Length: 83
Image (cartoon, rainbow, N blue to C red):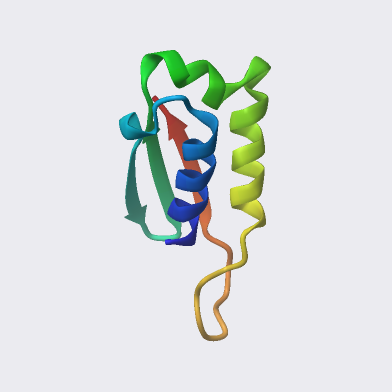
C-alpha cells in the first residue's frame, strides 16, 4: 500500500495531466509489480533523461521499510513498470 501511495504522489507532482495517471498493483509472493501509465506527453517527465527519474523512484521504493510482521521480515521486491 505504501508503495502505491509513494508512486502516486510522485507521479501527480511530475506530470501535467494528473487525471491520466493509472496505477495498478500485482502481488506474487515476495514480489510486487507496480504498473504506472501516464499520458504520452508526460512519459518523458516520468522517465527522465537517461532514466534518472525512473531510477530514483525505484531507489525510493527499495528504501521503504518492510511492512510484514513477525520474525520473517525479509524485504519485498518492488518492480516499477512505466508505460
